[in-house]
Amino acid sequence: MNIAIYTLTSPLHDAEAIAAETKAFLDQLSITDYELITDNEFKDYGTHALDLIYVRTGGTEGIFKTILPNLKQATHRPYYLLTSGLSNSLAASLEILSYLKINGLRGEILHGQPDFILRRINLLAQAGEARRKLDGCRLGVIGRPSDWLIASRANRVVIKDILGIEFVDIEINELIDEIGIVNDEDIPNVFFKKATSAEVKESLGGAYRIYLALKNIISRYNLNGFTLRCFDLLPTVHNTGCLALAKLNSEGIIAGCEGDIPALLSMTIANALLGVSGFQANPSKLNPESGQMLFAHCTIPLNMVKRYEFDTHFESGIGVGVRGYMQEGPVTIFKVAGDLSRHFAQEGMLIRSQSRPGLCRTQQIIQLREREHIKYFLTDPIGNHHIILPSHCKRLLDEILS
Picture 1 (cartoon, rainbow, N blue to C red):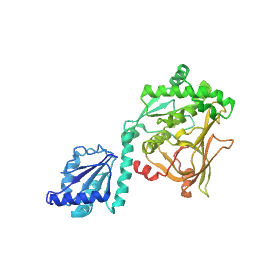
Picture 2: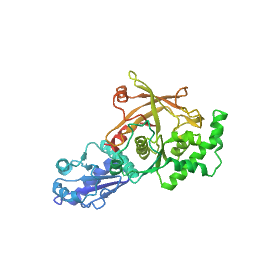
Picture 3: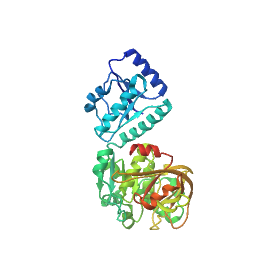
Picture 4: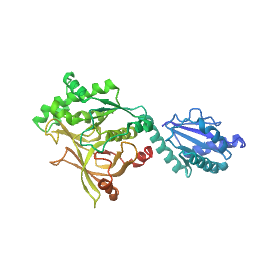
């Protein structure tokens, strides 16, 4: 990870003694892959995954006040003040942090036992690296959001300002036309073996053409990801995007369903942090007393499952839907609001995957770690779709959206 440590030092202190203290302190922390910038030089501040201001001594408050206007820092990013506590450094850090707060800026002092500081630095660096990946990201909206997503809208100006993500609107007819002219390629043989019926096997060619057409659209608009108004494909090309989305997500292209922009945004943040887009799913059933929930949808990234098979799309009964079986174990349920005003991130355990009639094809039973969090779904949800991630990562998600 790309970490820069900028030192803040009073000229009144002995330079050799401070250099020795610095080496001893940083050796204790055991930070890997960092650059140490000494002599109160802040020229490249704000360009790394994590920029730390190492307040090495007291008497540095006035120096910081002088350099603050020149620091390259987005207004929504905090200033992180690292201190050992030696040479009155903690006292100076308290004064500096208070000054930041008075001026409407955010900050945090990193101080304590070495292992505590190291854990905090690693978490901040991971979140910072994810923010760097998000900055300049281009996401396509292919067709309008589905008509039933009445609460799932996004403030694109806020998202661009805070995360640097840009949205590109693409007419659904452009994709439909592309499907009609795309050159066929050989469908991987394994796909035919995954079909659960002759009907599904016959639909695989059309589903694969949608995948190839989407790849052309992605290349044409230089997209990092997209969300698709997929139900418009049912009456026009008589197939679904479920296979295409499952395959593209496994190839590193964030691919969401139903034109749901907040869900796509959530998947993009997850991908930047974890390298996997997550399972966009409908909460289909829950037990308020036990904290157990059922999530279901007809597509899931192929790189998230231990095995999968193809069935028909649930609602329409046509085309190709994906039934995936994830490894049981720790998961996080995640969703961010379309204006970034709030988010939900809670951890649980995937107890089992199942295949029952009357539901979308991929079905997961998840036990929330804290059952009281199920109240969120009944009283204050962020829309319908939520993203299931294959690990416990609440702290990371909270940090990047804090």
